[in-house]
Image (tube, rainbow, N blue to C red; front, side, top):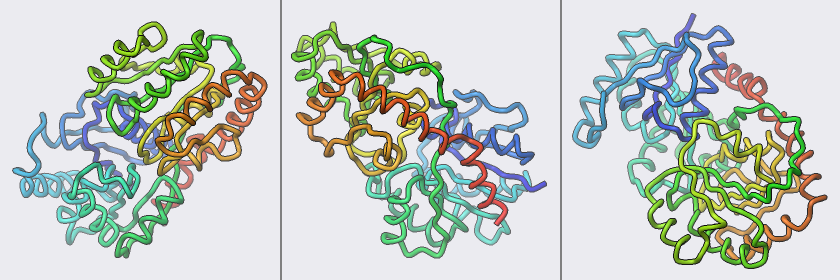
Length: 356
C-alpha cells in the first residue's frame, strides 16, 4: 500500500484549512489508504477529530523562524519522507512548496500542492508568490478549490504541472430541520482578521440595527482584531445587538439557531463556512469576493453583493430579514446544493487524482 503524507502548518489550529485536511485524510483512511500528517510546527493535539489510524508527526515542537531555518527545514522534511518511505506528498498550502520542492528533488515521490488561498491574494507574502511558481513548475499536480482560481493559475504561472479544481467537502450532511425558527439571528463565522471583513459587516450592521432592532448579529471566531471590533461595538451602541462569542469546537449549534448567514470577507479561497450554510439550509448574504462565494451559492437564491459595498450589504440583509418566504425557498435549494459537496463525492475526485 502506498503511503500518503499531508504536510500542513499546524494541525492544532482551528481554521478551515485544518478542518478540511482532517476531513479528506479521514475519508482516505476509510478507503484503505495509509495516511500520515506532518505539521511543520506543533500539531500533536489536532483540533479536529482524526481517524485513529492516521499517524501524526511534528517537524518542530514550537514556532520558529523559517527564514533563519530555511535549509534545516528542507533537510528535515527530506529526511522524514525517506525514513517513513512516503510515496505521495500532499502539501497543504503553496507557501510550503518553498521547502518541499527542494526537499523532494531527485526522489521518486508524487508531489501534489493543495492550494487553499485565492491566487490573487498572497496575504502580503512574496514567498507565497514564489511558492506558487515553484508548485506550478515542479509539482506533479496543483489542486485549486474553484474553477475560477484554476484559471488564475493557468494564466499566472509557467506551469508544467496539471492544474485541477477539486472543491472542499462539506463536514456536515444536509440537515432536515426547517430554517425558519424565528430567532432573528444573523450568523457569521471566521477568524477576527482584516481579511474576513468583520469591520465592514459592523459598519453595515449600524444601518441594519436602526431598521431591524429586534435582530441580533452573532460572530463566532477569535483573532487579532477582537479589540478593534469590540471598540467599534461599544462606540456605536451595538452591545445589545452584537455578540462576539469567541472560538468554539461545536459550531453546528450556532448554525442551527441562526436565520441568515453573512459573509463579509475581502478575499476568500474557498469559504468552508458557506459549505456549512448549505448543509444547514441557511440563506446567505455575501460579498462577491474572489474566490468561492459565486460558485458555492450558485442556483440557491442566496444574495451576492458587490465586494466591500457596505450600504448594499446592509440593504440586502434587511430585505432578506423581511422576506420569510424567500428565506424558506433558499433553504430548500441550499440543502439540495449541499449534496454536491458531500465527502463521498469529493473524495472520489481525490482518488482519481491519486491513482492517475
